[in-house]
Image 1 (tube, helix red, strand yellow):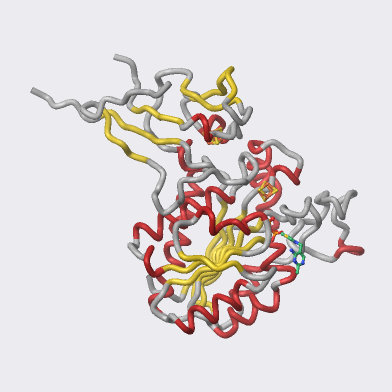
Image 2: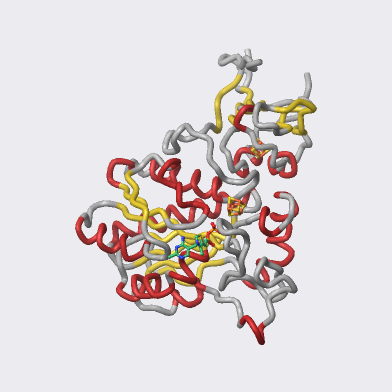
Length: 77
Length: 256
Ligand SMILES: Cc1ncc(C[n+]2csc(CCOP(=O)(O)OP(=O)(O)O)c2C)c(N)n1
Ligand code: SF4
Ligand code: SF4
């Protein structure tokens, strides 16, 4: 299994493409999309499955457009 | 396209607080105002005081804070937020009253109101956003602009002979007996944002003690008028700005 423990969902239409989440992600999970949103910003998106759900991106996002999810612990049988 | 998250596999650990209204802000990309709005409103929700919190919006880029923060708000004339907060808090002493002000607002045109509210020990929380410049009006030099810093009215950099020295508000108000809690924080890194939230939380809790004014200075960016990218601006805070504005607690008599 990949080392992915988390996942972010970005409200791309409200992202302003400031890049702070990308710069503060410790695992290089995020990057700018090649696409623009309706406001003309290259929004941020997940580039690889390396999210560890640390929330660093969400903490610095001035537009509060990031929701962070964490993989639930698998039940041991 | 909407990403599908399997709720059986994933749990939500961070989402936008409903203390913020569901609108897009007018702030520049990367501006720290949005971060401070968020942590302030998260605190209001966590303390469950949304129904009895009143914010005072300033003049400056954050003049529209009342469009974004989901609490009762009153906008004050430039610099007068602490005076307006005084009146509201005295009429409604069981409400939580905070001001949200930039450095042009709080430390230039509003210096008298700020100092005297702190001196009287009004039971309010003052959230002071220090971005070392006048943002809204196009990047003029503020009292907080640091030596050598370029602005539209100090194009060759702030010169102490001509322009005087920068002013450190936290250090000043900590000297006044009316203040009970004074801390300077920053929001340029995730860990700092967490600390800033703790400081503002303490500021709000201090109001319930009725022991005096809580003052939280937040070192933030104005990447647009600093003429940097947001990432460069947040790095410049660490490399340069914090040398003039060291972070830390200048006074804490809350006992919290
Ligand atoms: C009485 C009065 N004088 C001057 C102005 C012009 N003015 C508007 S905002 C501002 C400064 C804002 O700077 P700051 O408080 O640092 O907030 P920022 O925009 O950087 O967040 C000034 C001088 C005004 N609106 N009213
Ligand atoms: S920090 Fe927020 S607004 Fe900035 S690029 Fe990332 S998601 Fe977009
Ligand atoms: S001008 Fe500066 S303070 Fe105003 S919104 Fe833009 S970055 Fe923020």
